[in-house]
Amino acid sequence: MQSARRFFSFLSGIALYTSAMVASNLLTTITLPRSWVLVSGRSDTMIAQAWKAGLLALPLVVLAAIWVNITLRARQRSRKHVVAWLFGGLVTGWLGWLMYGFVVFAVQTGERTWPVASMLFSSHLPPLWGLMNTVGIFLGAVIGLWTVPERVSTRQRRVAVAATSASAPNAGTAPAPSRGPRIPRLSNWRKPAAPSVEAASGKAREKALSQP
Image (cartoon, rainbow, N blue to C red):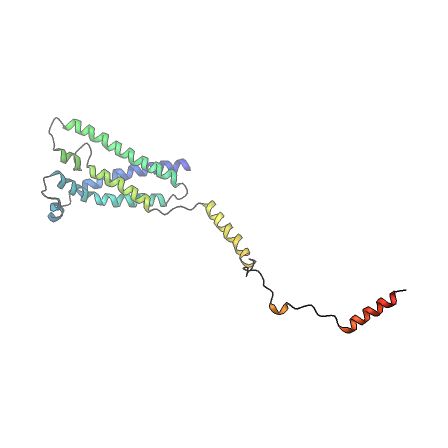
């Protein structure tokens, strides 16, 4: 069962990267408002193209965050292994697309050349297929991992329940708080009573009778 979870997590990482790259090609067909593009200056500069690629990569961030969050929530018991295999699948998908991009780039280099900015940020050009797309996918995966609530193991739950049940009976039998040392009242301090006359005469009579 554990091996199956790792395998499906690995496939989920590859599927996430592939789906995001396909979605990036569809997003490039969307025409952004001119005011958004011209925020960074002229549209033919490298900074402007990087800005446009970053805007188009925002949906990929959301996609990756939701994908990773759902994947990790569905496997609460073995999250540590799932995270490792999921990100391993992401890296494998990135390497696969990168190798494919270098193959396409080697084939098409003899036909034509492209500007460096277009090769870095365009989703249609090899070998990177859009640098901002890759950054957005991994950033969204990290955000999705960060938003998953912390898992509480069964052992920790048992320890917490045992501690609560053990402290409940002791709460009723707890000793009363100490009020400090007890100081005797002044009224209890009485002087020894003086011997009475009758007691003195009785002692003298007993002494006289005891003499021969």
